[in-house]
Length: 257
Image 1 (cartoon, rainbow, N blue to C red):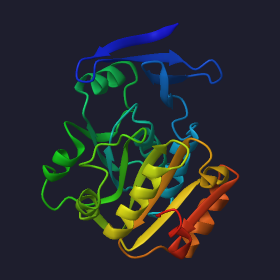
Image 2 (cartoon, rainbow, N blue to C red; image 1 turned 180 degrees about the vertical axis):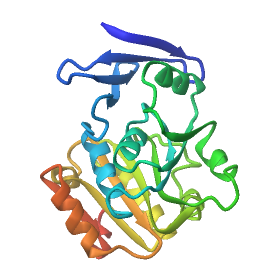
Image 3 (cartoon, rainbow, N blue to C red; image 1 turned 90 degrees about the horizontal axis):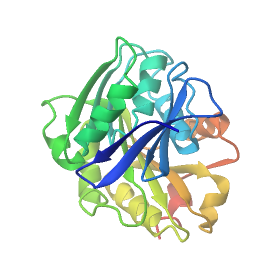
């Protein structure tokens, strides 16, 4: 039985929050019966979904453990990663952009953020909101979690948008793009190419069998202005989930088509 449900007028879909039967104090957000994310209120540092865990691993690398960061979430969902950052890096300053006002209100009404969280929410299109942020505000992490299949918004799935996102990164910062795709990975390929045109250091991170392109799934694309350090690849592989693969440099040529 659902904890709560709400009709989202902007997209015409239903959002539901259900108790996770396998994890105490955890809830699952679904959109039209498709699971989107999980929130563990008691242990927000435990990120259950594989692709979100991989993004969290990248967040862990931007500064020493426990040090506050600035983070921008383009696509808020259940704010799983915003909760993770607050739990592991108290004092962080975060902004979240969500197209669905009703989704943000729904999630925060039933799953409020931990006390002391510094999170500013914005309602609107991710690219438009990016241009409306306070001047001079830079982020250690920018997370784009909007793509859910081959039909990605063209104004976001492009080099120009990635350049705009890269422009708000602080030195040493990382842009993390979750790309959900079908077998063949046409969207993963096009976004790898677009990100490489926008940033100097790019890597693709995901479950090993996804890189055969035979299975649907989520690949995390990571971009840095300064180039891609080999020690980041080593750290991401060690962090799991296993088995995992990190491709960078010429290893990305085939994936980028």
